[in-house]
Image (tube, rainbow, N blue to C red; front, side, top):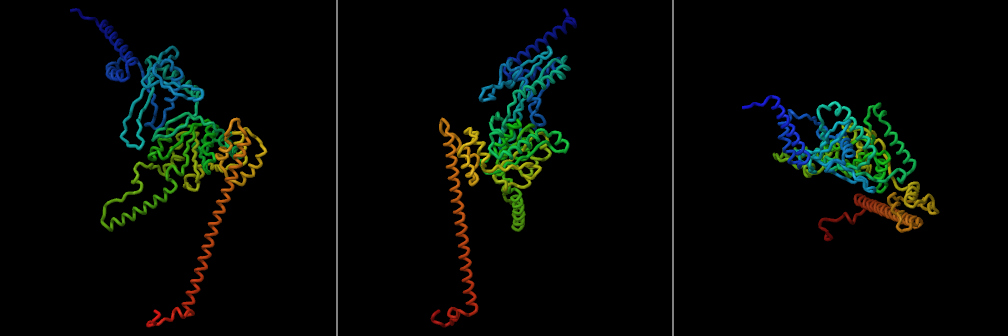
Length: 519
């Protein structure tokens, strides 16, 4: 029997090993993901000691899903720009409706290659589904995506140093070149996004020009104040409170601020947030250079009367405990917070911590904006200076605001009817939204005079309505006053009669005998 030499055995083993690795690579690249994944799990246990490749994984989320990984986002941008032509399975999305520009990125469980200084590396995308035990009123699939970089161990120093630095630098440059502002909204504890394409600017915003310039200067100063905020020991953020009647341009103001600064917008719906912990997670996942907006905060969650209701519930609970002790009952009554278990449990203290607590400093260069139609309904602690640093009242349309709207809608800087409109706007309250609706061209070609006369007619109607309401109000006051005077006179007469009876002046009424037939 002829025995093989050690060299022959090693050669044969190496050949088998190389073949196995080749088969594994073919299966991973061309077989369906489920089949290749199952095969890889078992084969890698055997091949691990001989596997010459190193893998680096970049997760979509870091810190127990508390925040998006910046590295993941940059790598996604880099791969979408540099390797999208090689991938066989891609994800596409329209990023500009006007130009129909499609953004491409690798689909899940896809692999592409990249070459750097003559060295070939491999990028693969994947996702894992995490099963959580928590119960939420907004159930969502908890998917965590990742990118995996694979390269030969002999190139470790080159890849870990120069190549990754190249990827990060190139990805950031591509992001800046292709940057599109995003509008985010929350679905449970997650943000979903669309491209923000609102055209509002401060030039088209209808408001007092002096107030407008003041806001522009404040925003400009804030955006350049990183060193200042660091020096004074404060988080780089600023709060804005926008208040005024409906239709005065609060939402348009936010869009103009975002376009002026180039910030993303996070539109936070408090009623979709289950509790304070979920609110904190949403805050941590926001990015810098962003505006966090809570619109109609007086209607979002019952924060206005929360302190009073809590005090009332505590008093009721103490009273119920006393009654149960007296009756010997052990049954605990249902509290108002227990009657609707699906209602948001966000508290005032949780929202205050969201605005300026420790967690609010996790990212810099952010604006927090509240809007409300009824500023008097808000808890003073919510809007004090330091939380809402700048209070901006957006009121009814003035003549300067009208001139901006006339230029926007009718390309008019002056007209013979402007003086009439100026006088009427001083006498009548009308929101910029109502003024804009009357200036909206209704015919083609546009006739500016028709639109201006439409506005004058609307102002006259509003003025007459206001006069009628005031007259009706005065009549009600007059009737109330007359009624009060009549009651006073009646009461005075009754008192007079009563005094006469007591003093015996009205004898026929009081001098009846017991046996009198008149009884």
